[in-house]
Image (cartoon, rainbow, N blue to C red; front, side, top):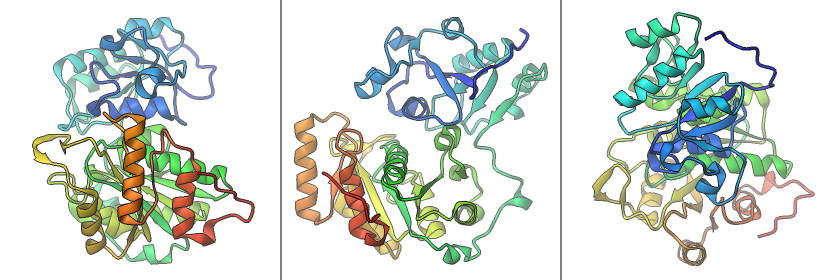
Length: 366
């Protein structure tokens, strides 16, 4: 199908997330619905939630992004430039059904944005289909080994504090909290820059970052250091926010070690889901407690956990309030839910730890 000219400022994209939107394995689609600087998201493909508003399903507030049943319905909404793979399974691989849909998108002339470990450009079937003029972007593909960085110590030359948003599990909201934190700081007059560490933040449009879980182990700390140094040298912000991955205590996701070593954060915000009893991908392993994770982080690195942010999954608003009050009383540090509580609570968390960042005109309301 011939490609039509795009008159829009950003590429218009549909996000394929069949059977997973608003769930843990749909976190790429979830993130793009909440924020996307690089692409204009025109629809979500998930037949199990078709004819609903994506914002309403995800956060209870409509945002005008429709959920449709299939690619044909997505195309009927208007011009499309690309199809984004919005699923993020633990395996990082495509199912046969997902392969068929993406091949159909390529056949119809749409570029494909792929954040999985399964690099589509290396797949003979996908490469042959795309050879007719379609671009496949494998977001997670690392640079050639000759271009990767070992840790150098240049992080000590970065002249602003770094705040890492870590968590007690994977798919728990670290990226969302990091994105919201960056936005509210900038809105308050603090120049904050986000360093992304996963495929979703890179697809969203993070200017600095690297998909850490695709980097060979010996380079992972150096690549994170290089991304943070690059953000400092390019923008000289007041503070750098580093998106976390997995959890330091997690048996599989080890990127938190590189984040702590590579960015040397002076402060850590810990994301936790109080109602989650078992690890999201290991139903036989219990969740760590906030206290145990704080102890592990502060033992592993010379840093301070400066606040708790809550993932309110399976919680009522009243239960969120109780959890916030409880963490603040027991731990003596601020706590909030970035999606349901005023942004002033998040700013207060930062300004308590880094008072020099508070603009003279800033008034924090909780």
